[in-house]
Length: 375
Ligand SMILES: [Zn+2]
Image 1 (cartoon, rainbow, N blue to C red):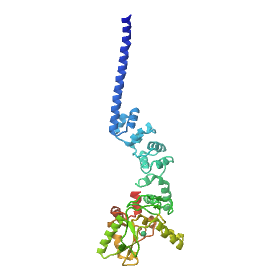
Image 2 (cartoon, rainbow, N blue to C red; image 1 turned 30 degrees about the horizontal axis):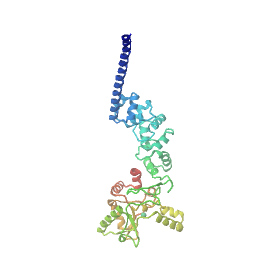
Image 3 (tube, rainbow, N blue to C red; image 1 turned 180 degrees about the vertical axis):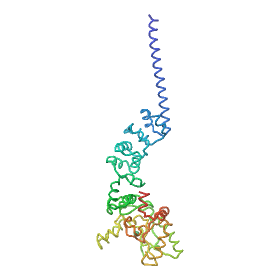
Image 4 (cartoon, protein in one colour; image 1 turned 30 degrees about the vertical axis):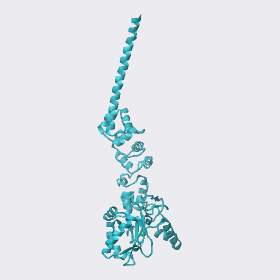
């Protein structure tokens, strides 16, 4: 009996061990295969999460053939992944946007091509793309968005402005981005950080508490009358260097006005408003916060040779040479519609040599430079 029982017990045990062992080895092989495939995908540039999904969806060979692709990585990481759009994901240029894949799916559904979707994504952020994906297919996409600095969120304004102002696409995009389709001081943006290339105009303002970096007093010998003036140190030093070179040619300028605080601009505004009324003040005086003088980066010059600065040889010299020192003629004649100011022959703005050179070479305003490169 005992031996019999032993034999009966041994056989299923052997089978069990055999089965368990085989399953174990099989699992081990699967695991090794899985982890080696996953690490191959990771080495290729896919995230752990995306790599897992790629294997789960049996798309390893597809991915290995394509190689690294950020949009595909995002697609496999996303809950919105749709297998039918796989070939599209691959061709659409990646942007770091939260709902990238969801928006791509939606834009494909509306009927945009991969090329058009890349364009839409590039010119917007997550929220403007999400909004855009909710509307019907638009007609003039490439017309506006082949311009590098066109903004998706401005699409309707481009259409309206083009219709009204009858400008070409490039001018339209530039003007709308500069808010020239809006009333002065309306929908304005607060500029909070000081920088040499900061931009202040009738749509970009500085708050009451804005602080100019390195604000230093200007030596009274450079200032008209008994005025006390301040400026940003770098701008002030550029001015002194420029003046030294001017004096070698027997040319002389003084500073009429440089840094003005919010409060000072407010006083000026109120004084002129009481004297001459709203129309005058709106046309000739910058609203508090909207004056470039609050940046500490600009100067109103006076000449000692002529009462009318525009007619002086100093004005002529500055117009031709100031860019070499990092200054620009900020409000040129004939470009009032862009700068928002009547031309001021005496008002010079420091932007640094690099930008000043570019502006001089391409004969553009600082506003256009800002819209093209800094915005
Ligand atoms: Zn000025």
